[in-house]
Figure 1 (cartoon, helix red, strand yellow):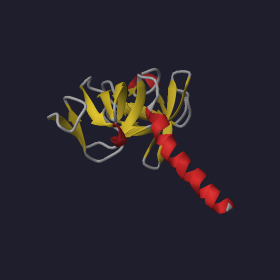
Figure 2 (spheres, rainbow, N blue to C red; figure 1 turned 90 degrees about the vertical axis):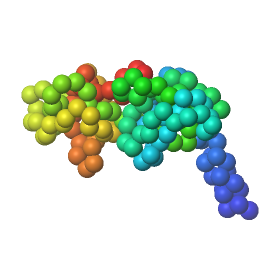
Figure 3 (tube, one colour; figure 1 turned 180 degrees about the horizontal axis):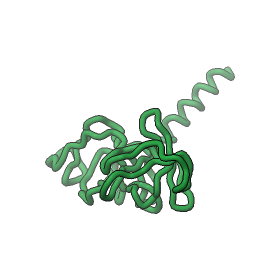
Length: 155
């Protein structure tokens, strides 16, 4: 009886949690979950496809919520609708600006430079403090100045 109750409670939590995550106040940050996502001109599969994203982990700003659809804005300022199931609550960033961004060992400009990233590189956001953000790209981790990233801070 206890294992059956545990199973029912676990199933309930799995069903309710994604729904609650979608009821967040807008705007908020999200990332693209799938390797191919259609950006539509309206909130339904009946609307025409404006663009196809092929960048899992790309950060987007969710600016409106409507019945299983999300109006998003990408780093270039393009707006359109995607199915909510194709978005992840995981935080991500994209390198912006001109020239390579330096990735440091610590959140300090005098710390060792680990590598450099070109604008357009996408990574997972771990933490931000005092103008620096810790990011992960593949199995590499380091700190970059927040002003070189889109996807951190207030959406």
